[in-house]
Image (cartoon, rainbow, N blue to C red):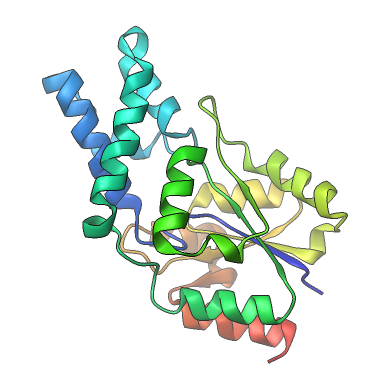
Length: 217
């Protein structure tokens, strides 16, 4: 019986991957000019939180105020670039709460931007616990194992829901099944099919149907 489901954030709960990349673009181009990294290079560093990505490309030129500026742009652009969660996400979260499933978030984001988004999108109250990333790396496998200990659960009592190949691999390393969210335009569909085709969902409704079978309507 599934007792806890942990969610990734970007590309899973909200269509926010391009939004985050755009904020990185603004900050990098402001301070690095023509040396600013490409979006593909930035995306390749996802796993570290925003401070970690900024430090990775800026090196010794990084200043703490750059992260504060990143958060300010993130807040200012939220309404235009990421005004709502994905369609049917609220219905999915409502269903899971009604079933008594513990809901948490496990994201590579910083605590600062995660809180901005959760407050803006008005979904914070759904989640019992929010685990954010670090500037060094985001080892989700160890964090998932910590979740098991925190809630005294077995691996088979937990699902992780994420949109990345790394989410699948980290979950397996922790002994947990990953449900792959592939409803965002940013989803790497072919790569996800290759590693997790049997648990790949192209709509939130399809995933809810699957979970209804697991948990009972």
